[in-house]
Image (cartoon, rainbow, N blue to C red; front, top):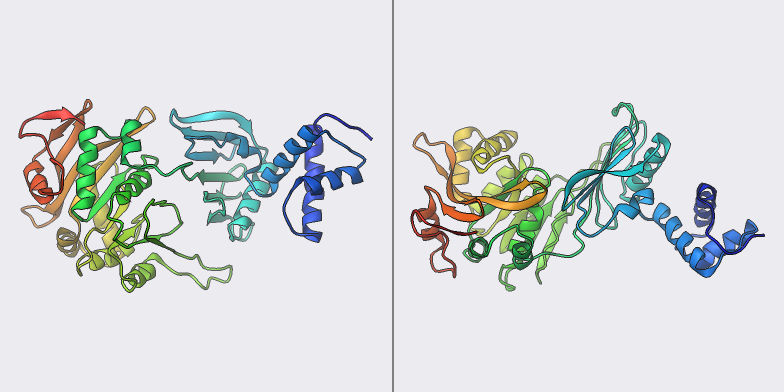
Length: 402
């Protein structure tokens, strides 16, 4: 029998298997009494601090992210495991490679366990999974042979705390004047889209803007996977459901948007527009539901009309019909970018129909070298927000700190 120091790392797999077998016989938590008992059965006794550390490591492997758990820190938004076993971290410094490397077997075991904890099947018959873990992490995995090497895992971590516009100003994502503009957009109940590429902070900004909504408003959030954390006293979340292993039981976003209309919403929020559900959202916003909003992937604000046309086509809307619907349902685009790891506001644009009747996005405000500058639609934008507590644009031809 040994005492004192930490159990060797090569003992962890055997101890982990014992813990899992014990949990199958006696469900419950992975706690110190359970670990002490299992160690004694193996003829091991550890000191108090070593036992606490071992319990934490075992708990990470049973309930947490296993070997990835040590990479979770404030500011980390994504953890990525590639098919070669390399592990990448996305944080305030941008995307960079960690020192950790997972073997194919360890990556697969982790992927299967996380999928199971999220209520998804992941095996050779169903080699991919998209899930929302109990911890709030958004999880996606692909197994071989769809990946040429080992399992590929993508984890989007929830923010450690909910950020408001003041926080985003302190972080440099928006300037003081831009913060006033974003507040005015929310206060005026203008329907808007937050756009940007992957990892630009769309959900974070949308949640921060919704925090500015009146406490008297009821916000109904519809998402494919729960991700939008809104600090507001009256928020209701609806989440779509994937089909089961027999291909039945799916509940699509289009169904949930229709259901949201019957829930007395003051604002309908579509966490991410990625398919034909855009048609349902536009119909909802065209029937008196002001202040609706959502996020859309787009590289620039000017690309948003083409992106909406592609989504509308999935919902059976041609270009002309989509332009007519959007022109009366959505008004503002708030576009984000990411430069050298920093997520920041780049542009505010108005959606409107051009001379050819098709949809276009016209710049109202843009951030240029830290300055908030007006664009061609600045006057129309300011008029729309007039009386809501913020000057929406600098004087014509002017610049001010963003």
